[in-house]
Length: 213
Length: 186
Image (cartoon, rainbow over all chains, first blue to last red; front, side, top):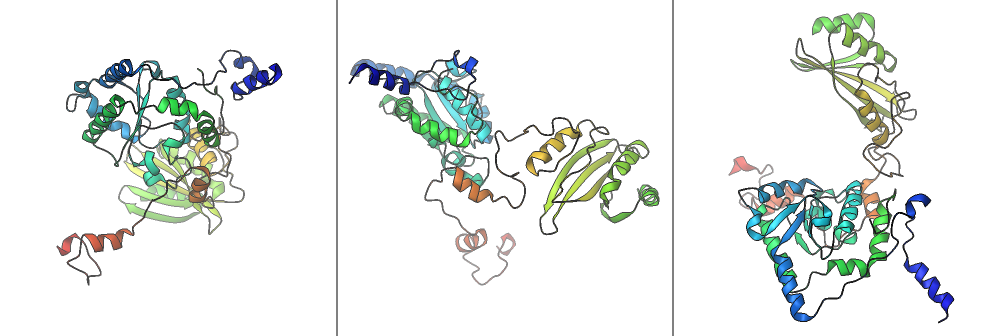
């Protein structure tokens, strides 16, 4: 392969950031997300244990289901017993709880928050609306399947699921993390074009960078 | 309240009066009288509060019905003013000078029903929907299910039950013959 072809491929691998203006494009990186390989077996096992025992959730209630997070946070169900704590910004969080239905306006913010979170990151989707649209399956502005837009690790079914069900979901997430099966971030990086095409199909006024923030 | 309606009757033609409750009245008036009636009710009869402004799509009659809900704090009465406007023209006089917050209802109606209010602030900007390219979604000719199937990804395996039939089979097996099964049969 000659040098010209390599240059072309490198150019294609970069993100276009077409939603931004010429001036803004220089302010954002155009690099793609890259899959992260696990470290050696025992170190990764230790790290996974540490990740599972301190889950920090992003305090972003996307729908009506976020109302179940309040009793979960406070004295009655007290999720801090399980090492789960709310964080105010995506940069500090490792778990994204999608609280119920997501409209197109919300999915724009969801994508934006998810991409800002630092890896390894996990997603719990609660409520029937995130699974197949639930009672809003025929709505003009509510997306039906959240897993076509961001990768999802655990679904908690119900309308609404009780805080107990959420705790069971967190428990399952912990087991999956410890088993090393939660690599949603790598799935997102590997199928980046597919996810991005799905997102851009519904978000018509795309005025943000393609990946880097 | 009767006196107020009688005084209104002397000024303009009222097409219908519905007295739904002791504190809830609806009157239907003609489109061109609306601004006059609203300013009269606000200034002379003390209906100072515009509770909401909403629209209903009567596609069979080719009309939109607008309801202006007013409230009087002195006599504690709700009064709904109903106006029918032409669906093809779908344009109405803006009342943001009478009640400043009306611009928000008017902006929403422009987005959801396509009813234009010339002169209303920010009426052309999007309100709830971002990047909407279809016809206004609350118009009844807009097929939400077809749009949802076209735009979003359906998860296969979704089943549906007729609630009446399902309840009869599952919960009220004891009364297969009864036509009106319900809790009181138990």
